[in-house]
Image (cartoon, rainbow, N blue to C red; front, top):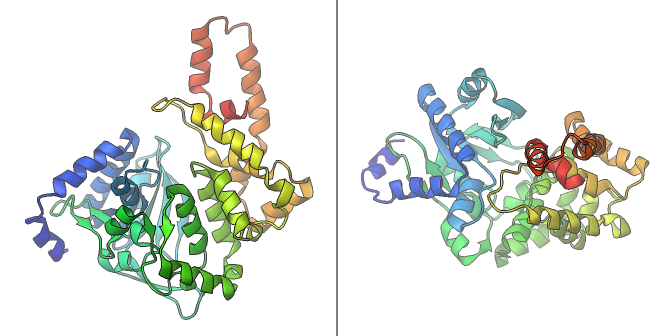
Length: 365
């Protein structure tokens, strides 16, 4: 903290980064930043916007993730946010001391402890201990995800980039932060391919070599069902999930999720159709769609009931997430009946109904 305080007096670009942040974010996202910032200050903890938000802002991409790293235990911040009502805890990782929160505006955000993780052997459960933000960033997966922005009073707007992630963003390259990054946690190979597909970046030669060695050692088989489902949820929010599925199939990794999703059952046509529908939504329109249920519907549309059941059981898909898929048809048909109602005899009434309808139901219809 003292280092950050000292630098803050000398950095002329700090306010520029805060301005850049606000201009790149949707108002709902920036409101979450302000809420977390205020809660951290009240708790006396240092908080940083980190990972995906910084990657997307500096790389000029739409901001998907709004995640925070706290020096110390974030439990106080989470308690303060949820105590006010409206903020919901989606999941908690007790080992990593991180929480996934959903705000009333629909923004989903993760708040985690700055940490160092040590792996006794490849793909083993790590020993986690608290760390500084610099130590935390050096231990992340890829350099483009190892950038943070201070949200603290004395150093607000200070950019922290210990692995030169900005340089790799400019070079459009994906590079691991260390020589054992993919060995330590093999789920990172799925994450790497997800970023490559979304961003169109190249994988650095050394990282590609590390990836090939991990595959040769078959370490992908040690990825847990919990980790796989977390990746599947992330896939649902990708701009082009179908393209990612094609990539995973080509790399012989899709069968990790289910041995039945291959060949004719990939349903690439369904993913392409969904992509085109999403692209039809005008930019800036007030249209919010929960992607997971619709994605799972398209992903499993060609599977038999037995195959679907096997996938759900293996991945441990929570009931709430499963309902988002299984109840989509009935809910959408109810919306269809409403739209066909004689009461909606004016275009303005149809518009108001569609405006308040869940986006995923509109897309489904």
